[in-house]
Image (cartoon, rainbow, N blue to C red):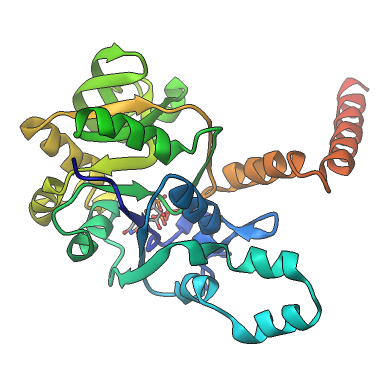
Length: 295
Ligand code: UTP
């Protein structure tokens, strides 16, 4: 059996929902408390047993490479001050090999994955979207890898969303379910409101077989004028089974403003240094709002 050792993190998107903040700064570098979003994702990959990561970057994304590079001046400074806690924090990613490839034009997620084909070669691999954080007891990607190990077939992370939200996601038309694993009839990218075959949405974590690259090579432009990964997954599903797995955990879309704020609040409420003060602040705020609402 081929073990899942490599992961692609696509991070070359334009981040238009976060403009103007993302004009000169990658959205994947937006900080959640004291760490950039993409570091949470790299950490999930490491905890899931991934050995090599390729980050797909693009124009204006140099900060991502700088972040995962060593900064000897900073390390020396922290060492002299004896700040070993921070020293350890800034070198978390040294536990994994990280490589980079450039997507010259943001032609869509499907195209971004295709750009990494030479790095992956002929083995199954993982994909973690650069702006999706999942907080779970067992890392989300590990949950998918455990399922992959049973079937050796592609498997896509899904969770249920509200009816109104279906138009924002890739949606599955489930055939049957066993435990948390679905057999899937079709995968549909961003169905128009009221036309979704279910409310089960693709959520930024994938295990794919390398056959996807041949499909992506010929994949036509889809929704929003982009080469969509979901469209290629549907074609893959026509030649070999692609399963969907309803993973456990909270998924946060850090790539849109409200998702970003909710992520920050939730993470801060789990942080020992911040949670009491923040909770006090939130309660006071809520009381004030409800007083104004009533009067
Ligand atoms: P999104 O659609 O969420 O990212 O893609 P985006 O296009 O940057 O966002 P908006 O809609 O303009 O605000 C999901 C992931 O795929 C990457 C993004 O960087 C993000 O991590 N992506 C998207 C690419 O790498 N290349 C692309 O062409 C598109």
